[in-house]
Image (cartoon, rainbow, N blue to C red; front, top):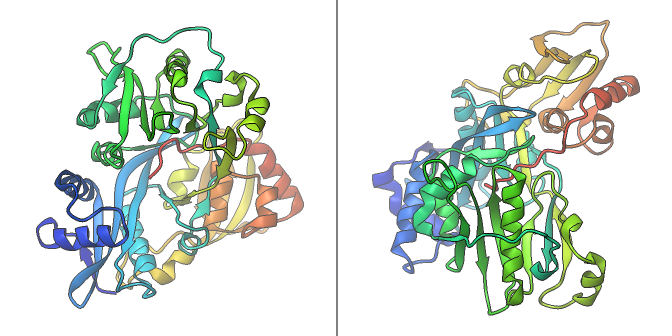
Length: 412
């Protein structure tokens, strides 16, 4: 593979062509959008792979953080892997993604994350699938809320810096991610021509504290809430009250269920309305999908940040990382395969080696990442993923790794 860093002057038109060929950008319709895509590329790390001396594959990352229990860890967010029409089935996407991840690992990212187009492709680079995300569609008029919202302010794509700051300051639970460059929010806000925001500037210096970002079509919807940010649950209820206020005209709103919230708790007769609207354009329903993946890049860095309640446990870990075969020979970081002695507890640690007295867990990095993050129990992963060990060890790990279900709360 012939690859190099993206050159904004030299590679701009080739990158835009690739964006158009994968339908991320429509040709000639919006010069502002081209500018936004260019700024988005330059806001993070970017590599191109060449065919006939021309960029035909593009890999993009952005710096971010992922919340592990109560602590933020450095995250490499893979925000795009795009291959042109003439360069398919050449292995460029796999190799270029592996290479940009290795570059991020060398720059001290502890974890990498991405949104997948299909399960299996990124597993070969050591990624493991996150939990199901729930998407709920409902008639906003059936929200049962006692308080009435204040008159909100309109928010437009021109407010992208304020919106980004608001997203960074939101309530965050285990697994939640932030993308640090504001260009991330700018691009997302301009992805739909029918998007708008509603919210409140209640900060001490007039900062945007809580808001909704919505897109919609037609006189009666449906509307889609792309994200909502709030710093406390009183603000959350006010945002939901805004949605209820739209219910006289809008008959359907679709949104991802916020971390820690069960929307059904605040709906009137949800099963009745689900039955009444079945097979209509305004159907009330709930769907789920597991569409994001993560992997550990720095094993020691992640383990020493792991602080768990209850009794500790010590075990051997035989870890296999499949990313190595996709990396160029000169790349220093080769993944995290190896044999380790792991201690998990209030204070966790890891060292190289094997202790023959201890039980041994054998795992691929994707499965171990899912275990560490709390996606699924160790016993469950031993059934469905590349992980195995003695029954007693699996049950002990089930007990000590009783983590909240991770929710990224920011798609990328």
